[in-house]
Image 1 (cartoon, rainbow, N blue to C red):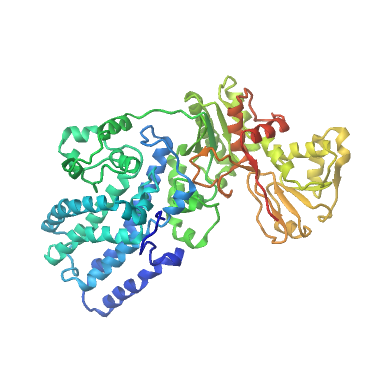
Image 2: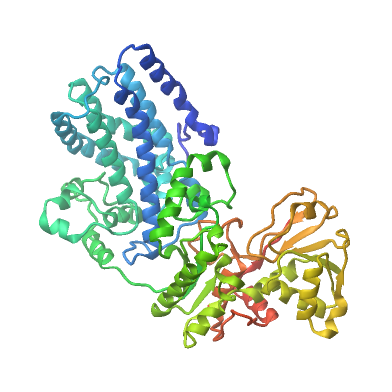
Length: 621
């Protein structure tokens, strides 16, 4: 929102939320009705041109969002080395409002503007006409309108909303108050409206003009330099006809320079070009290679989790993952296609980068889904991908790599011990985060608890928790004889007295659960039970009268930068234990691995995490 919001700042359909697309229903219905009656335009392509154009615009923008986020996470050509936070993602979550507005304008134009119906697919004279009208007057009028919007009166009421984003993303280009966006649409309709009135408009010209505007807008706000120098060397005048991301980035940092829309020659003419534009372009194109100190290795979970990755849909990635049936079915073909492509051709890819003081971190993802980790035919392939990622991180000088989710499975690689066996002289430290996970679970158990029920598939973390609790004199109850026998073999003889076996489920107020907890078992828990998972995945939440904790995780310190996506199902600015453990490992400079059957001192790791600003995640009953 602008610092002093003016009239018509809010979009008219703001209160409709995710149902805002229904405002197009009357226009689509009327168009279809007229087509079926045979009145007016009976050309199917003309009837479908507007819906197809709107869908294409949405996909085009989304491609730029994913590309920019991927490049800014890994590219050395990043322009501004600053962070984006959740407030910016929330502010820019309505980027598709301008697509809705364009749909309304197109439908109304088709109804009231002579020459806007029965358009041919292509007319060369119309394309040339639109190009000339864009160069002047659109670029000229935009330049002066933009300068006017930087006057303190209009800036504080409208344009400051756009400049709230100093580090830009592609969709920052269309984040404006409603009144300001209407002004831009009035400018952009000049070429199209004139072409229609002159009888030279065509479907290709209109779609091409919208695509050009979207392309240039997205490119100019993507925060990484991608325009090759060779392009300007081959055609020097192009420097005045096409801006670059670094050119427009200066407008967001200096404010009083580089006002142009897409063509910088008006900035040259009127003396508003920033003098450092060429130097910043050269520096951004050359780039600076920055190797991370810590890498967290994760993977997608469900088919639809790709949309919740930072590289996916920004508004979804900024919220904890939750399965949404209404869009999951619509996106099923894309999800399945992406899964097949990664299955065949996929390699590890960079998801995001973060910084804590001088420590730089990246998150890498193995292109495999959770169900693939359960397939025996995929184990060797997944292990080779993880091993390759570890060796690449080693070569890049990474200090610590943490294995997230199923990348540290016992059956898969023995909690990471497989890679140490194959490469005993690794300089990089492999961390699975067990010791910190144990500490978090112990902290989560309500004070005064004397008996806990242990349920689910036992893991390295589960055994470590059981041993620590028995040493503290807490009774551990098991309802499965198999679990009881396994724990009995692992526990020292002096601590086995704390291990109890029973068939009764309501004997403990805290349940420590791993994977495999059954629904009927949850229903047998007494009211007010705390379900505390020690697994990588949280249990299904079936009971409203019980307390569900997240899987082991901690709140990150305020100084940790560039957090604008949630880690799977965790709340905002919360990280999983294995990811936090890798960061703490690097901050402390510990020279040991924590994988295989190796567990660090639980108290030592817990104290170190608190000392570096990580906090326990408080669960409200």
